[in-house]
Amino acid sequence: MTAQLLDAPVKPSVPAHRHHLSMRRRLTDKIATAAFVASFGVAAIPLIWLLWVVVARGWNAITNLGWWTHSLRGVLPEEFAGGVYHALYGTLVQAGMAAVLAVPLGLMTAIYLIEYGGGRWARLTTFMVDVLAGVPSIVASLFVFSLWIATLKFEQSAFAVSLALALLMLPIVVRSTEEMLRLVPDELREASYALGVPRWKTILRIVIPTALSGILSGIFLSIARIIGETAPVLVLVGYSRSINYDVFHDNMASLPLLIYSELGNPEAAGAARVWGAALTLIILVAISAIVAAVATRITSVHDR
Image 1 (cartoon, one colour):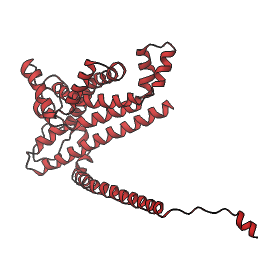
Image 2 (cartoon, helix red, strand yellow):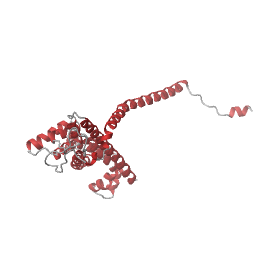
Image 3 (cartoon, helix red, strand yellow):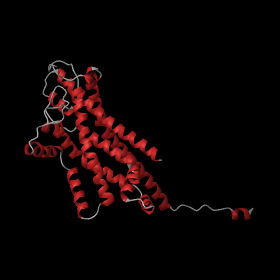
Image 4 (tube, helix red, strand yellow):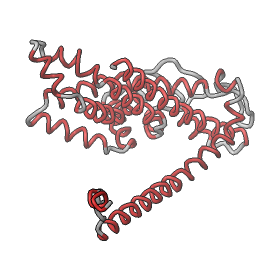
């Protein structure tokens, strides 16, 4: 019996200072978790309130079938009729043209900085992208106005708006693409080079497909960023209550421009159109974010 007791393992005792240290760490973790949850709640309250107000006041407008299929041509200020077909078309066209201009240029810039960059030109390019990322939208709009309209004598148009939106979209595409390209393991590039594959083909066949999910996500999020810009449409194009298919001539409506125009309408119909256009704009941004998430998921599954 005595031998059994002597042979039994003895549990080491935990020093008091280690016990107190463990308790303090757990307490700190709980306090930090509570602080994060409280911060999230404080930040979510105004967002939820904003969405609730916009949905409540704009729901009647967007549930009207004519809202999506008619313009405001011939509609009186006090008459709640017509819709945002012309403004929705203008927003999509302007954002689409900006994406056509900014996405290829942004992708090539990011590829140059990550795959080929080095030396003076790379540092200068990085500096210019940083500067462009901090440029306010009104400054980009005034730059396009002074160059495209005042100097080159082109008229105000939707294309001029797209030029300004492309300037705002470009640094977002460059930075998001850069980050995704940096995440591609160098071992993939080295294995490709070891097999005798040229650098340009390695970039096209291996690097870009590997980073495609993040690149697509950044592109769609940049589109969502520029959809609601107001300064370019206020400076570079006039408002039209009917649809205009010519992007190089005459005025063209957009959702931000419709909201700005109807703010001067004292009638109840004007307020209803303002809230309806605001809710439509939120829906567009939400769709862009959803498309970005879906594209990221699909390309990630395909890569696996």
